[in-house]
Image (cartoon, rainbow, N blue to C red; front, top):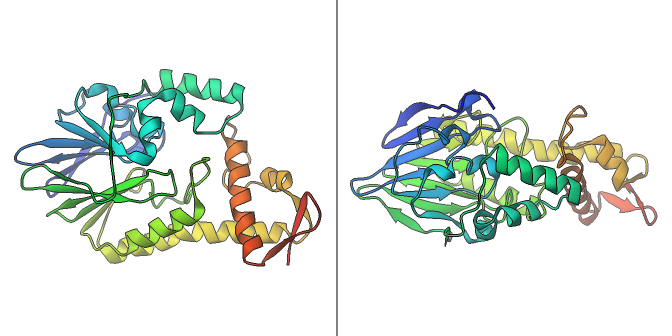
Length: 296
């Protein structure tokens, strides 16, 4: 997978460990947070497989492979939200939670094992929204931001005013809520919660890095949220003629047509159904017959 090194950038008492390719998947951006008593790492990525900095504990924003690929570098307590605890404890549970067909699940399991070094951490501990980790002169507070996964979390570091928003990552790809445990409504609520938090810096897991200032963060967050509205609009346009769910899946709301991977069709189907349900509930679409739907 190429160079797995990282570069560093300092924001108060937080060091961002910028992954290869500016943290673009399969890499990611990790945090190193130092206090007078303890040091912690957030989301040890693939770039931390070798040369990982020392830490007394690890916090995981959510149990996806790109956020824990470097976890094997740490024989220290590991914490994640209770909603993602089972997946972090067991690779088998993580793969099962993706809702893939058997052949695809087998392929993904091998990739998690061989490319992302996922072994499972049965010793992992669960935290909840509002849990505070006191490092001595510096605190890290859990901000539960579900939707991407059930347990997806951000972390607010004080007194620096640094909010790590993980995979509310502001990329043009847009919000991802295509896993069985994902939720479109919860993702939108989490974006609204982030919007209400005043911070000096906002750190993302991928590509966009750190955004300075609440005004600029909110501007980018609004654009990120706009991708959801664009998917609604694309689906309504498609439903000018009656369509089945499978026809919507073929059209694709999430991935570009050339992207092929075991997870693509299941993700597209779940995303299509979530948007379709929303349009039906809003009276913007209707069922034509047992299998087809159209815009009203």
